[in-house]
Every structure is written in C-alpha cells, then in structure tokens.
Length: 168
Length: 255
Image (cartoon, rainbow over all chains, first blue to last red):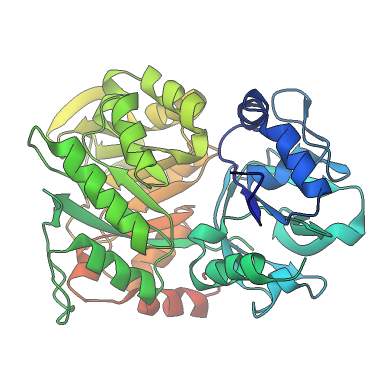
C-alpha cells in the first residue's frame, strides 16, 4: 500500500533512535529511500524531519536516513528545553509548500533537538529559539517541517494542503 | 520568538463539561467539543481537559471524548484526571490527545513518570503539582504538595517534588496554587517563581486568575511559560483575545 501512495508523510514523536528503529524493523527505511528516489513527494514532520538527515546527537550519535546532508543537535541547556509552544517561521525563499502562508506565521513546536543542514539552499524557513535554526527544509520531492502542522490551526492545514496538492 | 501560551481548562464528567460556558448562547453549553471549538476559534494556544468521571466505564467515556475533540480541534490538548497506568495514558494518547497530565499516580508511584517519558517521550508528560503554603503569609516557609483537590497533604515539598519530576522525565509542570484556586486574587507569584527557578522545563501557572494583570505577573515576574484559567473564560469575564491584547500591549510575545 505504501508503495502505491502518491505522497508520503513521515511523522515522528519521541526519541530519534526509537523512531529510526521502528522504521527499520518494518523495512520502512528502505521503502522511504526507494520511494523518494522514485520521485514520490515526502513530508517529514518533527522527528520525521530530523530523520531525513545524516545523524542525531540524541543518546550519542544515532544514524538517520541520510537523505539530506547535515545533522541534528540539541538545544543549549541555557534554554528551557523542550521548546513547547507557538513560534514563528521566517520564510527565506518562496516555495509551493509555503504558498498562501503569511511570513512569520506561528506554528506549534515541541522538540529538544533541531536540524543543522550542511547545505543552506535546502532551508525554506527559520525559527528563533536561542539560536536561529532551520524549521522548514525542502529539496526536490523531499520536504521537512520541525513543527506540527496538524496542530497549527489554519496555517498548518494550509501547509498540509499545499503538500498534498503542490507540484514537487 | 516562542510565544507565551494561554490555556483554557475544561472540567469534564461523563463526557460533559461540568461548568457550562455562559457566554456561549448558540452552542450546547455542556458539550466539551463545542466549547473546545469556540476556544480554538478565539485564539487559545492549547486546551486542557480535566476528567473527573468516577464511574467504572470511564476509560471508554474519556477515549470517546478525546477522539471527538481530536477530530475537530487543530491545536494541542492535554488530558488529565484519574490516569493511573501506562495503559490509561496509552488509551488517551492513541485516541488523539497530545499530552497527558499526571498527579496522584505520579506521587504514589513516581516511576510512572520515567516509564511514560521513555514510552511516549517527555514532551507529552505533564506533571501536575497542587501546592499549598505552609504558612499563608510567609513564602519562605515553603509549599507542600496536596492531592484530592487540596485536601490531602502528601508530605512532599513542592519545589523538591517539581525538581524530582523533571529528573524523572516530566516535560512540563502544571502548577496549581491551592491557596489561590477559585479566589480570583491572582496567581501565587512567589510559588510560580520558586518553581520556575527550581526546574529547567516549562511551567504552566494555574489557580487564581481574576484580572488581566494576573496573567502578566505570572508570565513575567513568575517566570511561567504558560497560564491556565477556567472559570474566568467559562463565565465570559474575559475572552482569550482580551488577555492576548493586554499582554501584547505590555510587550509579552503572544500568538
């Protein structure tokens, strides 16, 4: 059924390692790589976005799906971690995923780790939390958002609609 | 910037809200889903449902409510009240809640905090701390943790308990002042500040909101990340937008 899907969403809640393990136990890691290579649009949400990268600092270094270059790092201990609540996306470039969404719109975040892409050109949007970090990324048919669009009211639903209907 | 959160709280019994919302004339006042939709539309950042159902079939009743809320609400919501085991929490989370709030169960068996954090992630484990001053007038004598609506002291210091809950894996502390709850005299700012200083996780202040400046005090002097209120919103004294406009005017970042 997943092979036949026209678009895929990779959700993720909890620990990076546990999510990767859950994927690989079912062989979904291979399937995700296969479908992304075949051009199926994929949206990673929260830890699902983080898993697109090479590795995460969570519980030592844990390897990810390596579909994007870069790694996942923990917020500074100086901050109140996890970041819980509504924060803004500063849009860096226009993209079909962000169509119709106001710049600096608020989305709902819950996370202790953030993505640090090695290539700046994949970054569509950034968020300030102690540092400025990549909260929306995309390359070709691959998209990732650190926030939870399904919990972000109208702006989140618009983003999901954009993903479901946009040309990637 | 991360915005400070305004969280209305709904008390639910047998799947119905116990206190109706007076200002809602057009919707069923006892229907928590309708109330939740109203608050969502008015700009609530999250919702908290406190279940007080005491019957044997409560788990099914709660799961059914949670599912109906999850189908229609697109902001995060927490469910608390009577969750005793990982199975209880699992049922609520699987039905669509984003977080669970633990109180008595966490005090009686603190390992449930670490077990649930490991199973579901710290981000969905809220530990509710109901605290009462040892001496009403003197904050330096500290606060004691109570259960059963502030009737039963459990012999724990609130600051120590909050710090321990964080170590065990709690992702947030929902802090209620039993001295102020229902009084409209304002949040216990000294308590809120003391707990905020004792932990490195977000603190949600609860109990005592009666005026707009009370929210401001809790979020600034008190150091809280979020403020929770029930009757103030239910009875229409203020709308969520009133609170947000006031806070924005005083320089607090809100959505």
